[in-house]
Image 1: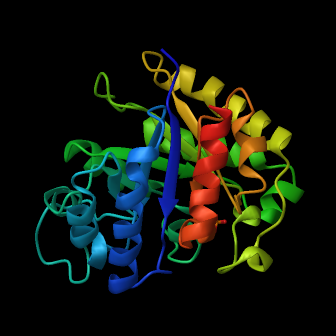
Image 2: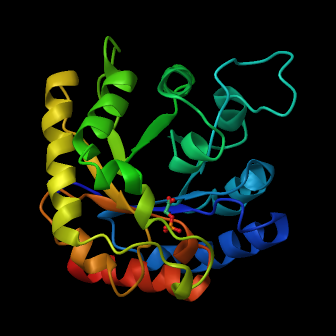
Length: 260
Ligand code: PGA
């Protein structure tokens, strides 16, 4: 059986509640046309997650949280736990997205706690790793990614059969806003492939029982998605800005299906 191609749409804080519901409704109306090898998940804002899940419940499109807190319930104003997201219809959760790590200063220890909480709640975590531009320029890329992976996985019991999904997202390649003109630095597909392979090799030592899937994220557009998906160790894409506009997202999906 061929491995799935993951098409993950991180709506970040781009879409508000009515826009998220409208986008989910449009996706549900075209969902049946999708080939079975692609696995689509949308990650709306916490506020819109339950409504989006409701819109998509009769489709194969899954819903995920963009961020969770690691305690299930309690006096943590403003936070939402993995359990609560699950109750609202989530089956995935992003953990350690670069915007959490760099804008909100979340460290590897906090990321680990979130990673464990997501697994504990029975959701599938999508661990995001990647280097900043200064880290890349100073030759620290592999060290940074290895540290992020080790912090998440060392001594962790991985539940058998749970998909092991990592998103490699070089921070310097992430879009700074909506639209093609806001694209970040261009990450060559062969560079992304080199990192995806490196991540798989590192994971082999950390979770030897599982076959990991590595997604690429960072300014993916309909014109570039095929190059990334053509790489032998890239199993999908995590798309931000271009996933929040109907035409560009369906363009990405169409390109992915053409190549599958
Ligand atoms: P982008 O975001 O596609 O807007 O660059 C990717 C991500 O941060 O997940």
